[in-house]
Length: 286
Length: 93
Image (cartoon, rainbow over all chains, first blue to last red; front, side, top):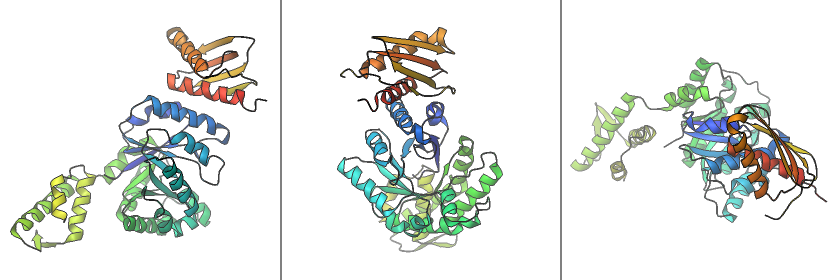
């Protein structure tokens, strides 16, 4: 199942760490990078380690480490490598940093997943190559704030300035069959803007969205959840596939429309997103 | 863990809610812990125990510790004490 919501939690804030698992996000990104002051990096690492080693959590946890070109990349990894977390968010992902992270994880026999954060012009243009550098990559996250800074573009709520970046990230994610995670909506009080922005991202093909405010979780979860009607249709598609297989039909229609492979794949994705996919459907896809 | 010495004044944490500010300085031959907490009456002994246990785990037998607590849980107290120790012994000659 895709992560509909990935909520950033500042790594040096005990209160937010403590409450993070009850905020309803599908996953959490504990941040050791931008949310932590330079002179508190050591403190945050130790706090996150104590937190992770103390509490069981229901949702998956990723840690955003500091970038390769900072003095903290390997210091972060030295602590994070022993923690019971799902994986790492790699900021300012580049070919060099993805290779360095992949090698480090292999050398230490660590089974972490990686989400590559694309937030530079070079990163965007090389994203296919960067994200192909490690088999551990399960997703790509668009970081629009840093990207627009790098592009010299004005960051607006309408987000026309990142339309190309979103489409590019989505195309690469589909090519690699990884998750496409949209950039956070930074106005914590503008819920209407959040809805419009999230719908735009979803319509383009994003599979989820990173968040910086717990108050955004429910809205974004709902938008990325399939509707009851969508799920019912998807079930009918799969049942029709089953029936056609039993009858030995190569092609068939449903509600007067031909059902082809893209429609079946879309139904499968919806059922997985809705958490109602059945294993018996696996045999129908062969 | 072998004994380690605090050689300089250090602090870690904050006085934000759910956090604790730990200040540490070289001791005078023993451990001295002073606690100020919004929940001292209920949890003062528990906070002291976590601080002393963490100091023992880290090999600190001689230090003066001042703690200003704002409702920190044990994991936070342990983390802030460990950070303070790390900062207090760094660059030891």
